[in-house]
Length: 469
Image (tube, rainbow, N blue to C red; front, side):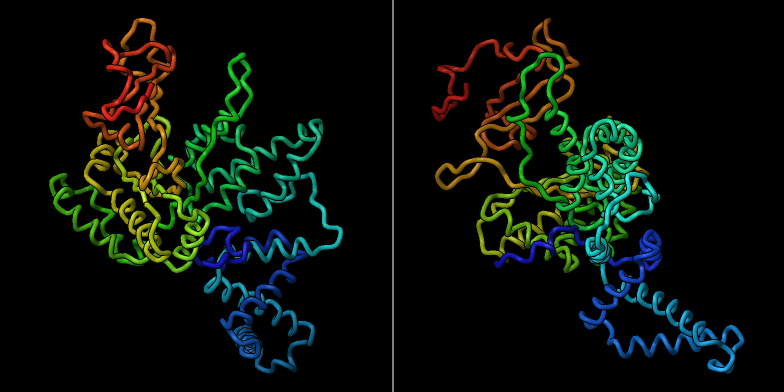
């Protein structure tokens, strides 16, 4: 597959833009709005959405209609030329916004705004925050935030409150609106971190709790230890990741008439169990918007022939107080077929993750924790599987799952509140879905050298002779 233009994929693809959103965005640029709309019209004409001549005729016709509504029946005799021109200009702007909003994306509008900003001679950003971050375009927030972070420490201190406000708006829009998460993330994540997430996000909405928790944990572990502990930042990495936004599941279900299934959570549990196979089948038959499919093709291009894990990342998952461990589905895609076969497998894995949002176990967990009325939107985390090839197989050397609290206190010295790891050979599924012969290594993080086994395994080896110690 040929590499598409970088500019096409450097931003997330979103759904069609409401006209009011365009109006609010352009209101932030009172002196540049005219130039921005000129570029918007160029896109409309270039893409064949409407012919320039037809557009101008439509503007003139609507201007004449507006005169009649205002009681003018001799348009050229009762209205001065400059008033007539102002009337047409305003209607031209409205028609531009309407056509653009009904046919093109917010992503393209952001790109046009950035292009116009970059074309301004001597354009510099003000150190003062002269706009409302809550309604400003995200590109504007990124630019202002990047400018703040480049300031010397004494100047940064004066505008630190503005920088935090910008971060909070971006975190709430892309990552999480959970207050406990925001309270930590706004001090830990940089504008550069947030921009990387933005460029890797496909579709609108948030990236979900699992992705959010992973990024926050990674960023915290990049900090220098202040207690004299070991420096581990160079050993902690996040696998190459993309994020399918939480709004995409809405588009998918509306597009395929699956939104009626959202009331499953209020049905008796036995009915939920009986209907779930049909729900999965209906999801597997669903189609995705073309823009989402195109973006996923690019993800596959970037991953090459490395295996991919498609991970659930609901808004509640791995959040403060709720783990949802094992309640939603994740799937491995071998990614070893043709481009179309790999795309089909990836789309099927995403469909299955979407179907798992209303599986019986997840609904029962939500009922138990008083979360049944929450509008559970599912984002999806796409990651390159890290590992090595072993003959015809590919898997990590070791994998595992971590817990913040240790329920297995096999020695009096162990502190339950420090947590523990369950490490296994090969894929991490064996750490979560326990089987009899998975040979786990249990590690208490307060005392990692204390072994729980009463008797070590013979010769310190697995049945196939491969040492794991």
